[in-house]
Image (cartoon, rainbow, N blue to C red; front, side, top):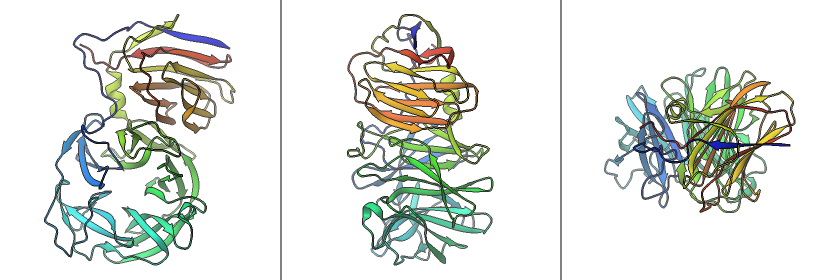
Length: 444
């Protein structure tokens, strides 16, 4: 084993420089389940506020700087179908010339709200709803999307299947419609067999493949994003893989104006386990989801965020004795890794006393200083070659991106003392080159 440590030529803050904030959170509350929608180059990020799950919205053009907006609703009549979470997934109804969102209301009925500007909403006529059915104990989290081949809309919903305990009654159901009024209910299109209700399902198409994205609720944890693949929305669906671990919660995708699928999710406000998870937290760094040649999905840092980060002050780091980062707990480390195919080697990036990132050919993990795993992902070894590897630390939040394929995030138990950084290479199979370090500050 050999150890490679970093000497940090950037040992303190730059006078007059601005430090980039990586993880957005509203000032006075945590950010819960997010529902992104792109319009004219801007992301409208609808989210739920802890408590009554009220709908809220913020806007951004770079996925980093978010502007809170006032979300309003027209007066609600006593007979209207209305809930605090009146805006979830949004789509454009071209026939009616409005933006539309569906949400669950009473016994699994899915009802619509409409808007002309994405900020001011009103109840749609009652004709626009997905009727309740009899095959479930509960149905919720609707997501409406367009099916080009059928020239119909689909509505995918999380479902607790009737006659089974909740802990093993999870499924996904689907309804389709040509006009958003008359719906054909296809029932359960994916039975999760022995798992709890999934969270926030979506269906979307890349090329000829359909993908179903959801988060599997486990014990008391929302769960990380997983996906299934099929040739059509009705299935049959096959498990495709995981896009992150448990700390990217209730993740949702939206297609931007460039046709890219962007993935949003929240990091719990406190360190989370399978048995204890705070609902709501900070917005994780946005990922781009893209399909590999074999149809599997991969993630990488959103291009807009990568561009902003590239323009920050980065300093080379050489092999030498490690140095503390003064009082900083906000920094980034990146490098290039030569990765021999089939290699059994790996390395650790340590930042004591907070924790470390452990990386090998088939595993990516974030651990605290004692070695307890807080987030991990089984990965597929990338092809032989040179790949980018980046780690970003902001206070107690850690994000990892590697090989344009895998990403991982976690919130670690906080440590009060300053961090140090060092690499530890396991074996001689990895070549680490172009080491760089940043305090995430813009040039003065």
